[in-house]
Amino acid sequence: MNNSPPNSNKASAFDAHHPPSNELIEKCVHCGFCLPVCPTYVLWGQEMDSPRGRLYLMKLAADGAVEMNSNWVSHFDSCLGCMACMPACPSGVDYGKLIEATRAQIERNTPRSSAEKFHRRFILENFTRPDRLRRMRLPLLIYQKTGLQAAVRGLGLLNLLPKKLQAMEALLPKLRRREAVAEFTPAAGTKRRRVGLLLGCVQREFFSQVNAATVRVLTAEGCEVVAPRAQSCCGALPVHAGEEAAAVEFAKKTIDTFEQAYVDTVVTNAAGCGSNVKEYGHLLRDDPAYVARARKFAAKCKDISEVLAELQPRATRHPLKLRVAFHDSCHLQNAQGVRAQPRALLTGIPGLELAEIPEAPICCGSAGIFNLVQPDTAKTLGDRKADLIAPLNADVVATGNPGCILQMQSALTRHGQKMPVLHFIQLLDASLRGKSIDSLRR
Image (cartoon, rainbow, N blue to C red; front, side, top):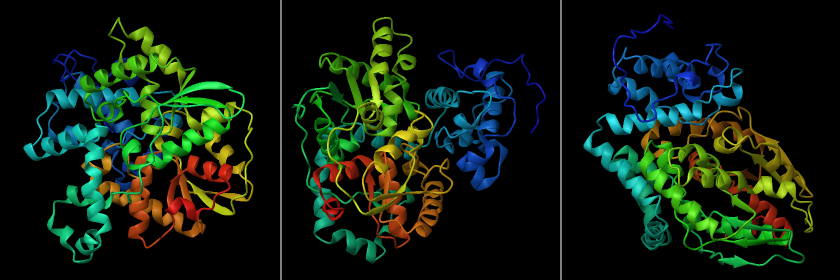
């Protein structure tokens, strides 16, 4: 890689609103520890599609040595934002803040084709609106339950659609009965904690069983649970896609809503949402009316596995005779640093055997909206993960993020592997209720 100093006489390609921090960029010592954990570098071996290369591209743009043209942008569009480079970096480069700042610059200052703009707008305007997702349920249920989906797939009609629409159809979850979560659920026995539950958007409408399981486990362990009906999207998808203004507004609404709930802890069960709300202090750093409140709110936010790890188990665990392949969601293990807690919850279930999937730092290809906007790369990564799961002879795959569930279920189905992919809280819930794995398939 050319490390010659860029031309500092030219104006920066970035605008003045929160460009990527030069101080953070300069922390990179070009050691290369990030390379073997970066999904795109592992696939292609190209320096500019590695974290180190992307940092250099940021530096070039900041110094006015390059323009943010389509070639430059392509290297950032190909980044999954999985943050695997962060725990691997001995210099502590906060790549997460840099890639999000760069993507915000890209969305404000570079053109996209009309088709690409429409596709991204469709995703961000619908997948951040639970009301719109709920309206999608009926037509999708008809599509699945009438056999139309099987016919469309069997006849190869999907091949007539653009790749991005094919990818969206392939990721459709098998819809089940929607399990509503009450706005308030009392603790079983003596109350130990009052918690709020962030319901999510896709989680709320397409994985309502995960939220229901989360509430049952929390109440069984002595928590009263508040799930405000007024809560909106937390802003995770917009912030990861560079739509900073929308993310800021969602963050403010979320803070307003949960402040009125008067909870000790805000529980997340979707890793992408969890990593986002924990960074509200940074996202709202410019707003004097919210910055202190955002930091206070973020300090209350914890993944469900973190909350349960802090509570001495009270509810009885019944045996589950299962071999479980555990997949670390990137935004849980890398962005939040949560790895041991989900494993401790699972190994605390009698009869459950945990199997580790090789290449744990490598993303499955979900990565927010990545599998919808970069379907070819996402499919390759999903297939890679499915190949690594197959030899484990597992009964089920467990993870902590709805996007990972969709991505890996699609990949396993393509590979003819029929094991279900579930949120780890569903397994603990089944154990507490004395249910079998078959009850989770229905």
